[in-house]
Image (cartoon, rainbow, N blue to C red):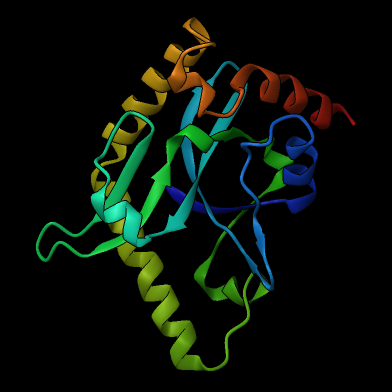
Length: 173
């Protein structure tokens, strides 16, 4: 899987219809997405990555949540909130390339940039190791939310069918 930057205008558009769609703009930084986590019909889904917080250490991996944790030392790098995966049209994506990273995030110096790239490489390595598991979780999660839209699980997930409709409309604009 690769790193992607999702167009912030598209994200803002989606948030009009589903408040669970995560923001991507944090000051002068943009949140990254990992994908493709799932393909349903013509829709490619991407999942946002979030920095690890103290509460995440107590949480367990589940169908809609996955920790990116180094098995050798237990260090928790980040988390994937699979429940917040969204369909994104190709024209609203930019694949992140390390040599062009400054287009999406400023750095105070070369060392800060190097450290951030190293972090992304480590996180990508952890993601690649569990890629199949992540994709299986995404498929199961999607299906459970479609089958039981009023379940507690579905209520903490993005409204996939609504987002697919809005994705299709956005693509046609």
